[in-house]
Image (cartoon, rainbow, N blue to C red; front, side):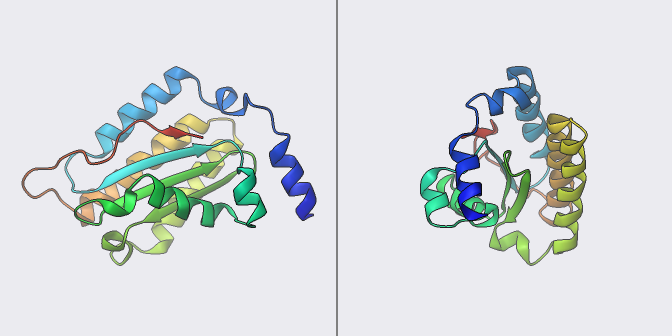
Length: 165
């Protein structure tokens, strides 16, 4: 099973990301992230990875562990209010992970993150990946507004454009 999983990732087509996300989709997702970040001190980062890289496969990482790497790589753990949220999508295995920084993790129940993830996964299964991510980003923004209302200036600490890998 493990060898098959590695082979699947190493032989996946290079166009996998483009098949699911056209430029217009990415522009719409960028706008949704910018809108969802208004009115609270949180930051939302979306990372969409077509396949796991060989180094991650060799180390036996699953999507949750890979999301943790992306959390650190893109500085989601370095926001000034510790209020970053990563929405990580691994297309080939159809996995979605939501990781919240320490300032948020204690305030938002895991069941709320799971509900967002489940709804987004249903949209992916129905062939609406961009709509699912836009909805998930909006729901994350609503949770952040509830638990982290903006107080004073609210700089945009993380780029709104989804990171494609």
